[in-house]
Each structure stands twice: as C-alpha cells, then as structure tokens.
Image (cartoon, rainbow, N blue to C red):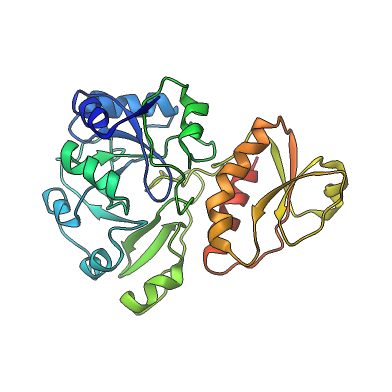
Length: 310
C-alpha cells in the first residue's frame, strides 16, 4: 500500500512500522523512541534479537545525543560521505534502546542520501531501519519487493527504484584503525584519501554475535539454490544469472545482471535478479562468477557468495 509523506509521518509517530526508501535499499522503519515498534520490526522480519539495527538521522550532528565519544577521523568521514551509503559504528549510551543495539555498547549510524527520507526523519525523529525484507532474503530495492515479503496492504513510502541497490558500507574502529565489517555501496578504496589507508574487510567469526546487520552467514538468498561458477554444473541448471555481453546456451533462461562494463548497473539489478528467480519458480540457478573482484565488484561477489551458502 503506497502512502504519502504525511501519512508516513503520522504512522511512525503513532508507533507503526512502515517501509521507507533510501538510495541503497528500502528500510523497515520505526521511531527510535517507540519500543513497541522496534519489537515489531524484529517480529515482522523474523530477525534474531542478537542482530542490531542501524539508526538513521537527518544530520550527523544529531549523533551527539547518543555517542559517548568519536573515534579518530570520524568527523572527516561524516563530512565527506554523509549524506550517503556509509554506516559508522560508534560507542553509545543508554539513550539507544538495548533491543536496537542487541545489548552491545555500540550502534551503527547513517545519514541517507535521499531528500524524501531525510525530510521524513526531520519530521518523525531518528529511525531504526533494517532492510525491508524477511531476514535472510534478498533486500528490497523496489516497493513491490516489500509487498512480496509483507503483503499488499503493508504501508510503503514510494521512492521508486533504489539507485545504489546494495546496502551501506559499515565501518568500525578497532585496534587503532577503521575496518569494514560489511561490504557495501562504497568500495574500500574510496576511503583512502580521507583515512590515508584502505580499510580491511574483517568478517565475523562463526559463533560470534553480529556487530552490525548483514553478518549472518547465509544472507540475501533467494529460495533457489545458487551454483556459483562451477562450469560442470551449468548443463543441469535451467536458469542462469549472467551478463549482457556473454553468450550462454540458448536452452537456458538467462536473467541478465547487467553489463560487465558497469558494476553500478549490476549492483542496482542484483536483488531484483535474485527475486526474479523466485517469481519464475526456479529451484536451481547457475551464476556466472567470471568478473573482477576489485571495487564494487568485491561487494557484488560477496553478496552472491553469501546468497549461495547452504
């Protein structure tokens, strides 16, 4: 159910949960000061309570109300990349509800780069917004994706198709350096001019509590089983996720991720393509993994690998 900005503000301020667009993916939004709505997010997504949420603010200066201190270079990051697809994990005090931060002493913050969303936040207050999908499923980059997961009557503030198509990059300061704990729309090399180094990608160890969204081992996954680049399995797969420039067997149903010359296009299309497999009833799909691994391609590869884990 598509709603207006005024309806969105009213629903949020009366303790409801709605879907909200950002430049990355759609978020399932609740006001930070509405504990019942925060609880409802976890219920709707079927999300483990150990998986923390990200706080979205309209201006990074609002973070002063919650953070106990700022790590080195945080203000440089904020001034350079916000509004935008960056999330920073910071130490916070008890004004951030324990459920929102999964009992941790930290919380992630982001300033989204979509004017409609910042306008909503200015009116409704800081919003907790995990991706608007069932936990583990491909994220929603279009209003219809939200409706696929939560029903046609679920309230969605329509912002069209998300321009980035991949979640924000999440940075954490540890051992005297910023590290990436979730790959996202901002590639690692983008941070070098500000930090003087390229932050490393640090993955969660099996059994550790997630420090941020997107760290569960199987994630972003369609119902179809994905076969990642194994040419011996191509013959047995009726579906292919591939690229426009390449030729594939004519007997296969090919879903094009986009062009190998345009990783931004592939990123924008990725979750739509994974969801298309489900819409067409695919049980198995072969994925062409013959593409670079630097820049945005690293995030694309990581998402496909996570979606293909069993």
